[in-house]
Length: 71
Image (cartoon, rainbow, N blue to C red; front, side, top):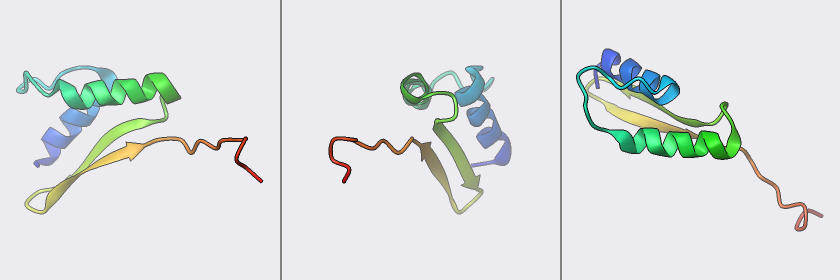
């Protein structure tokens, strides 16, 4: 994916401003927003891409510990 497209999608995830050339792709934003609502602004989705090699979707979630099962 070209760097400009990755930046545009990451801005869309953070700020909610849809990429100018794209009029679809609400799935990533929807998942990101659900994570933010559940865990806070420091969590969610992000993209990294290297043109011609591939794209990674980074998922950031908190580590939740069930105190009932802790020793």
